[in-house]
Length: 434
Image 1 (cartoon, rainbow, N blue to C red):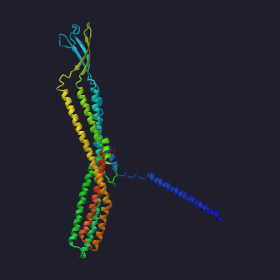
Image 2 (image 1 turned 90 degrees about the vertical axis):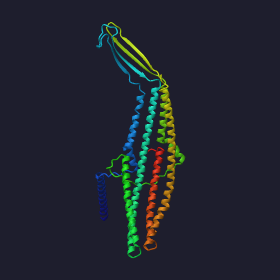
Image 3 (image 1 turned 30 degrees about the vertical axis):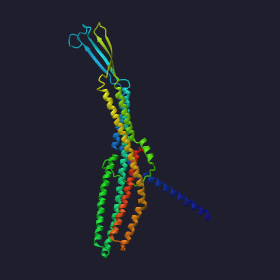
Image 4 (image 1 turned 60 degrees about the vertical axis):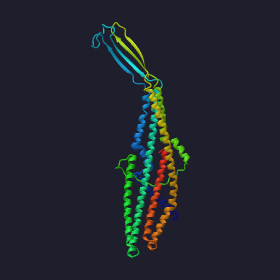
């Protein structure tokens, strides 16, 4: 008799537990369904880059300029607008339509004429406009990469300033402890009054550095808002953590990528092709242009109407003063463009090599800081603090250990920011997609 009761009790207990679990699930689901949405996370560096690509007025201006120039080729490759004319000839009187019945010279005429450029001129003008639009497109891509590089550089500098503020506040706390220890040592005649004053001076100096770094941070944040296209009264920009980017590409491969993909070099190449088209147009101007016209003239009653077809040729009679100097001008401009293109190529490759050197050097320097300088400085500070409390080192040694930690951290974060800035400049030079 006891077993069935015990079994029934277990069944009831299981059912009760199942019901409680179901209720708990319903509560969780309802709480999730009715919970307020989470506050959006502040944009990361990638988010700021995407925002700049969408909202930056500099990118928008370059994009619209490029799009505007794409409308030019169809215009310059179209025939000039035809000319329509109305003529009325009277005989014996200035009054319109007089002599209509009496004179065979009276007529009212309507005609149309069309200018026709010489063979190939419209095609060459369209080609030149196409190359100009291509150059504007490459300028737009250059502007995109420049804005992205500016976002990254400003962001990395803000990261450095934020880390410096954190380090300065940490140093401020450390100096507070040093000042308290020094005052305690002074009260028991184990420290001099000048040590207390030096500790207070160091505290004040750090406060000054905090204010100056805060000023630089706020100025950098204002610049970053302008770059991404934000108003100054918008929300503050949060700066996250960064880690060193690993970019394992040889110098020769970097040069190959820059020559093949750099929008700046592609823009220079488009300008070369545009100058070629301009020279071809100047040479084609030796070919005459034409004009074709047709007119109908209505005469008086009893007289036959007139029909007139005309053909005109614009002869380049003064070619030694117009066409020949135009060719010389186009040739000189082409040489100028070629020299500028070569100069730009050398400049791009030089900047790329400089940034590659900075990147390799900063890689080694960052390793020295993380594996040697920072641990050694922190260990020296710990040792100096303990030794000062028992009177084995003087106050100046302790203060020097505190400032050494701050200096080493400052140099590390500066090197880290410079490392990432070098990576950003390399990405811009080789035309990496944002």
